Amino acid sequence: MKIERMRKFFLLLVLASALASCQQHTATVGQAQYQNIKLDSTLKVSADPKIQAQIQPYRDSLEAQMSQKLCVAQEALLAGRPESLLGNFVSDLVLAEGKAICQEKYPDVHPAVSYMNRGGFRAPIPKGEVTVKNIFELMPFENEVVLLKLKGSDLRRLMNHMASRGGEGVAGMRFGIRKDKAIKCRVDGEPLDNDKTYWMVTSDYLADGGDGSKTLSKNLQRINTGVKLRDLIIAHMRKLGEEGKMATAKLDGRIYHAK
Image (cartoon, rainbow, N blue to C red; front, top):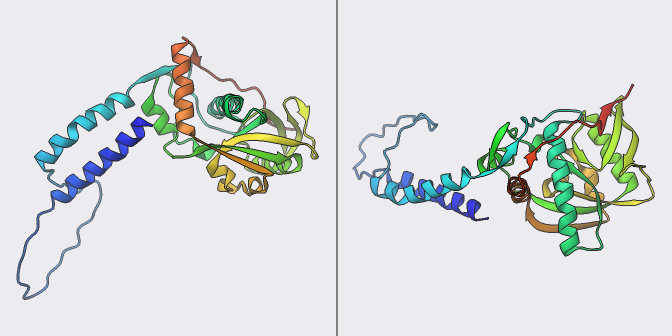
């Protein structure tokens, strides 16, 4: 993505500026003396005006792109458990866009569920205008979209894992939590069948077993789409804005605490 390339280039220029600002001194050492200098955000380093002048156009361009309006959120979308507005919104989005990817590139693959970990959401989506910057804050990682073919029994184990954590972001599935176990597990409205296979849309981080999702490493088939998860979200929300639609979500009991 153009924004990501520009962001990396800008960081390299900033680093070059900092290095160029360090003055070198040649001296004959008779007695060694030293002073501990704490390197943190309070340390002031004089920037080279020439390098700053080179950086400024890239900084301005990056800020302009990051401030682009994508759409409007009807209300603040916050993370939480057992389900949340943010988790439901992103998981629904990922499942819908994952299906679209399959229709275009993998016509024999039909995703039924999606799974996103709550820890992957690093900021809420604010009420009102949503910008590219907001999505970078939501998901600052370079995670990619992955398709996994799972046995029903392994999907049930994953649901139990999610239940033990109090819930996560999911779409296409529903279950209750009782004593840290998943009960009444359903996929696409039907009872989960241990002997069936299901396709899931998730991130490469989770597919690799991240955040305790080791069950996903037992997948029957894996497809790395090469699509950045963040790019997927940005494109979806930009489309909402172009169609005059708002970013909205609701709590529908897809994960609930059972009595």
